[in-house]
Amino acid sequence: MTASSDHPITTPPRAPSPVHGFGTLAVHAGSPHDPATGAVIESISLSTTFQQTAVGQPIGEYEYSRSSNPNRRNFETMMAALEHAKHALAFSSGSATTANILQSLAAGSHVISVSDVYGGTHRYFTQVAKAHGVKVTFTPEIEVDIRDHITEATKLVWIETPSNPTLRLVDIRAVVSQAHQHGILVVVDNTFLSPYVQNPLDHGADIVVHSVTKYINGHSDVVMGVAAFNSDDLLKRLSFLQNAIGAVPSAFDCWLAHRGAKTLHLRAREATTNATAVAHALEASPNVISVNYPGLNSHPHRAIAKKQHRNGMGGGMLSFRIQGGHAAAERFCQLTKIFTLAESLGGVESLVEVPSSMTHAGIPKEQREAVGVFDDLVRISCGVEDADDLTKDVLQALDQAVLETAKVRNGVNGF
Image (cartoon, rainbow, N blue to C red; front, side):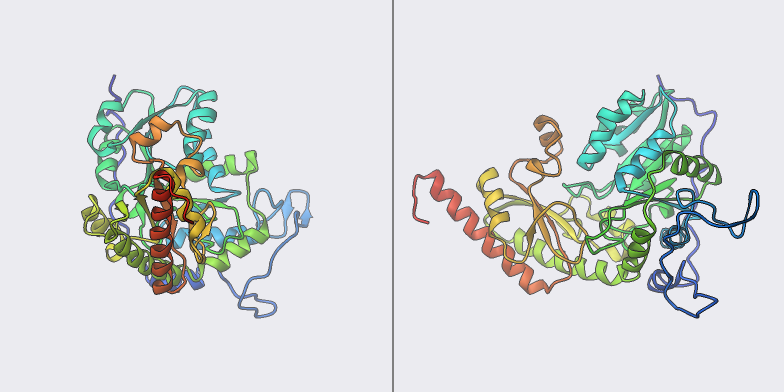
């Protein structure tokens, strides 16, 4: 059954260009100088409660830190500016952001999602949302077949672009145009690129979400999430859940993330430069089956990257399939000297992992492989080290891992 078109959503036009550039906004948005001391950097407001001059009359806008806090408000102001949004709400993690959005749906609601999503998102959709009466349908080609999956109960479409970990891209405007005809909201997870590289609201999306833990904070020392949007109705619904559920970040984490985001544009550019160099080196190696990186001309969705990403940037994330199977993938991650074997991404340091055994281990193998997450797939997060050092490190680990794996397979113990 197809959803009704009686209540379509008007797809918003591209937002007007902000008065200031991204770097200026990153440094100054939500960063008022202290009127009492003149401090140019905000202080950390650790107080959990705030004085009232009379019953029900707080001195300022704050009453209790779960509901609102100066550091959280400043961070949310900055994030709204960077994502060209009217509103932003911060949460205790990216997963908490997902949970709050899904919790806003009534029991019996239906969600359409891209298939290759972050493992934590897949886990929430298939185990938690299902228990709350929300059904999720996954599709690998959402622009092509979204209409086939829309029902009367469909309330939300969930997109990751680029997807994690195969770096598939989705044409946001193409999906939005179809979803909005049926009154369906579109959410875009923009974690893999950051607001510097892509602004989904400019392409018609209703909500953009991030794991702030990754590029926005950028220093691997904060767990946090954020959602940005333009709708006043969404602000009312989601801010109520933010307070009622209470999955909010601490004042200190908000302060750290705000500080980290001030250099986001610098880090995102350097990470892209490094990932581009590493991707080209891997693509040229006979020890690599294939490379997934939107910055390469060989990427099947390169045209979308040129349309949706700032200057066609590919971002700092890539993945590749290594010759020699799962054993070679694991050995590669053990042999890198600069890249650290660890989950997560988007920090100043470069990381490497095997999704099938780590970030996406909870997804059944047949479902993983259907979207390209094979046992020989390696995911790389490029940090801000020197590109030549990262490229040399990848190539030496690659050659050695493939050689060692081949020797083991052939029964040779010469290492």
